Length: 248
Image 1: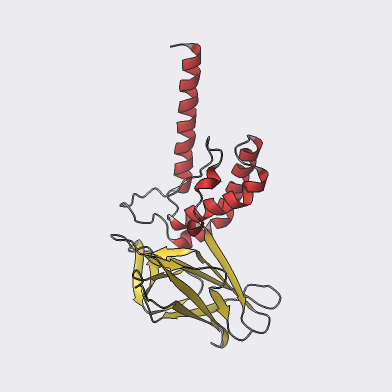
Image 2: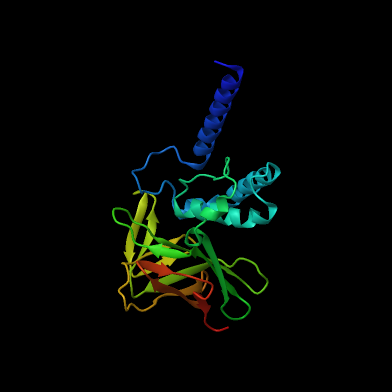
């Protein structure tokens, strides 16, 4: 083996070892069947901060090595975060030797952050995805992560009631390790609620998901809003107009 071949072989082993470590960091130790999430969206959101910090560090390295332009960092990070949330944590950080990776980005697979006023200076925020399509053989949900802030911008601990007259709502069952249908209405104190629907008919109307928030101490209503899903092909699209609050 020549010195050049030996060096290339060592580099390949180093890269493979690095990818293995990365996989161990991003994936749980338990195996799951194909299509099953290894982590719930609640799990992923609980470590979203450290994961984004990791992306920041990787992004800086990518710029330093000429793989990404500094102007591309924000969009690349959104792409990676979308892959992380939509694939149950079973994804990869696409950075190794792939200049121009953003041309492969799919907008529908990126997370969508929405906010709306709901009266008295309060703000309701929703973290979801930009598109939903039903999938055979596995329960693919449109995640709906809710949070509220008061007039001072401080988090408000509230109870949410979510309802939809189309499709079904799901919640993560820790014991079963999968999403379980809870019908057309669900309650949440911050944990993720997922929506699942069939492919829309040609003349299908918008799907409207009703959201209400109540104080934990005296069950007083403090927010009402609607999340609208727009029929599009075999699924539904969401955009910045999807969330609208009542009372603002």
